[in-house]
Amino acid sequence: MKEKKISITKEKIKRSAIELFNTKETLSITTNHIAKHAGISSGNLYYHYKNKEEIIREIYTEMSSTFVSFNSFEKIATSENPLKELSLMFDIYGELFWSYRFLMRDSAVLMAMDSELKTMFSKNQEKRISQIDGLLRYLISQDILEGIPNDEIPIRAKLHWFISAYWQVFTSSSSEITKDSIKEAKDIIFKIHIYPFLSDKGKNLVNQ
Image 1: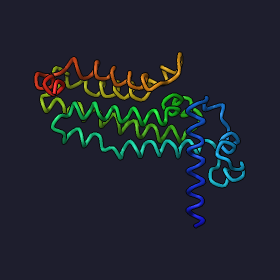
Image 2: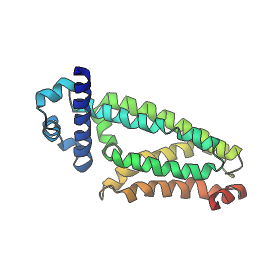
Image 3: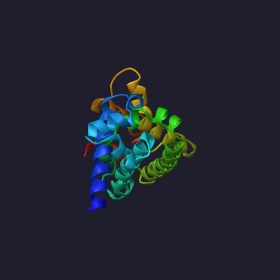
Image 4: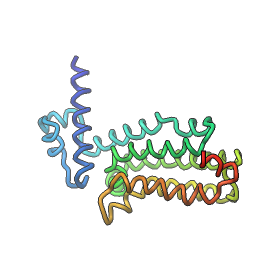
């Protein structure tokens, strides 16, 4: 019973933190703000988390685990229409990134302030870039994409990741993040990485 109560309280803290971080500047939010929003005492919060950085790391882990649970790269590789599945996956990513938008918006600052979070992010980044590299090679091997030199694939994989991970940092410098600005990242990736390199087979898949 006690473990269940602890789990419920930790979940309440995380949900409260996400709501505050998403709607305000992350740096301006303190553990006292989070505790008040969660309807608990600061002492209760510190019983579950040492500091704000630990809360953010757990939220980042939660988002990353959800991302992995989509099995997106496997689904794309086994789909009869990989491009349609890729587009669908981007829409699903968009909803996920919207739910955790403060992580997309403030990632550079948060990593600069927390070396442990930076290490976590860097490991995931390396893995995602490798997966994107593999996805591009798969689409080329299936004659869906063409005209991409082999030595450009790693560069394009990095650029793909950069747009996906940091577009909201750019957007937030002049305006608020919206669902449309998150979708804009998808549109840019398709216009840069997909549409210009479609084979005839790829064009047919897009039109299906």
